[in-house]
Image 1 (tube, one colour):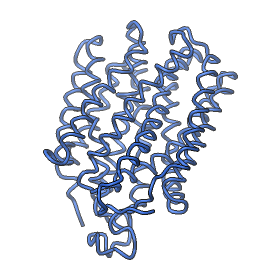
Image 2: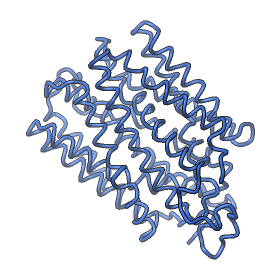
Image 3: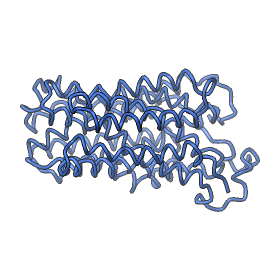
Length: 404
């Protein structure tokens, strides 16, 4: 069964529900890093910069496997690729167990990289899928709904690990993660089976089918993906956005720990609350009351203000402004994706692979943050977010409009 963007909205509920579960799984997998960073730092006696290499290892998989993932999708379709990604996730999570037993940072990085491969394949599947499941002008609305599923899962990971281990982070031994990771492996294997047998239809973007190229006249005659400047600038915007969003979501437990705040695990909820509020507004207002580009403009402005407040207020107060920074991040992903993917036609899958590769920003920017924290302190390290948000503001104002 195949659907195109021009199909009616009937039958969208079940695919949205299934894909929403997958977005939750993506967030859960990313959220594990926010627990591992302070744990590895204290258990292996390594610096903050070294501990943030776990995030770098996860996201570096997107650089290497973003394009191969698009080839796999072209060969076996979206649904089977989603199923395959969960098997990769399970393998990566399994490798965390011997990593903990041996106390090896190198093995932890390998485990993170393998789970990142699964994440790359799943992201390459679900993001273009949800973008072209319905009309492109309402794609940000659908992605906002998916974003709620994704971001609520980030703090669930450290909370789940804390509940199963039943210890404060400062008292946890590396081998204590064995039981929760065995549970996670079982759940992800089950999700892989469910994805394979799910009733998800295959979808195609307008003009992606060679027989309907007239549906996307802008792409007609183009010979390279690099002839779409709005896409190239969108890829760079996404690279920067993923980096700063990962900082807002993945550094809170570590930042709270460095500030010696009680129950630092609970601070993992600060950023997701801000993001979910933004997603609710996006799902409600886009596209009826506000366009995707205007939503990106507003969010970039909020993120710049929130970042400034994080670095100039007192540390105990600044941690709460990360929520405002995250609120600004909320509609960036739902807005950048459809703005960058518009009018690609037969280049849709290639464009999607570039966008997935851009997720490697989550490896680069947080790693820089980690070493900046070692050099200048946790609060000053958040300065890195401001130039990133300024570029995204440019993309919202004019970058997404550029056409050849």
